Length: 139
Image (cartoon, rainbow, N blue to C red; front, side):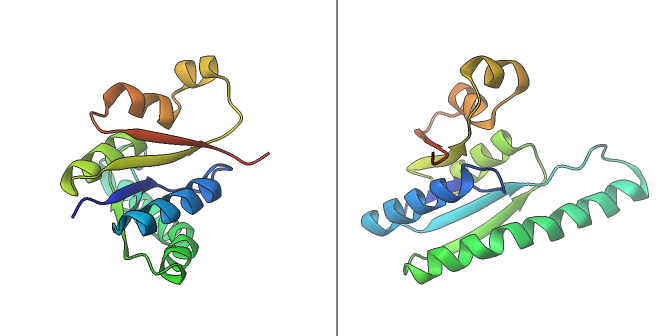
């Protein structure tokens, strides 16, 4: 069964994107996969392992309330922590789960800022061959 893949973090748009992804998954009878990219800076040495462990612990704390929200709505939910940058992590997971759509939150940044500084939503629109639903932060 095709899943709904949600990139979830602690950004201002994440909560609204979660609500929409849960609603979409529920209406389609699809499972929800919450994804968080946990690529530490640098990939060698003992510090890299420690940094990755710290990032994974933080990611689990960030994802826990989202898991509870999905479960409360009766939506089957799993989480995936991927050792990659967010857009690449989302594409990998979407491919693995044959996702119907990738959902991400956005926040009050201009299209120019996203293009120059690397918005995840902007990058996904460039690299994903699946539909991408960009949800603006409330207000």
